[in-house]
Image (cartoon, rainbow, N blue to C red; front, side):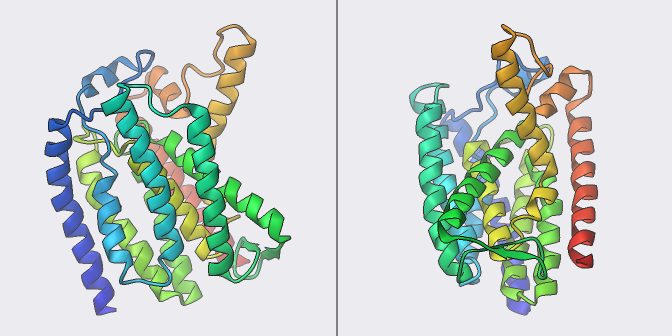
Length: 316
């Protein structure tokens, strides 16, 4: 227990140190966030804010994970695989192609490849093709179906979290209650290594949040949002609560559904919009809500949903 507490404290301190350095160095390198022309006018104030800030929590989590093996294997691999893909995309957008990034097709294919590799790792880590909702509710499925499900799962969760990252502190604030639930589930399962894994993730995100709260000094970029999404998916797989995450992550899902509705509606109606802007958080901004208010209410929604999900888990 003392080792875990020391590790958690060290991770938080390291995230603060890296954050201070990253804000300065990434700004000097001009790795700034691209601001959409059709977005809220208030976002133009963010021009020049450095991106790729996901390294603030990725580096401490990576170092600490080596003290929490074997529980950290899958979450760590997932975070690094998708984080590397996100970093490549960030560099393409901000340093090489100046805003374009990876093509949608290439990015999606790389995500699928990473998801398939992680599906194989998940099969061996969990000792079989089982997906679960709680300790008492799980399903053993065909191995081929399992690989397909897991690949889609990692790609889907990663992209959902990526879409949620659009306002200062939003994706982090929405994710924190989910991590707290994972800590509680780990305790109930008696999986103390996973308590440690989730603990270091919690404090690393809190360290990052200090630099990302409005007005943000740095954005996590695709580097951070894709790493965070894969990390959450990986933890759910290790705890065998993949299906519970479909409740825990309802805010992510709402953001994703808004985009899935907006894009085809825009194309089929010749430019009309189902929402004022997608993902959903931008719709509320353009409807007159302040950025901080949107983040506050989305966070409250995530807290309530996480509490309900945990009660369901507890009661089954």
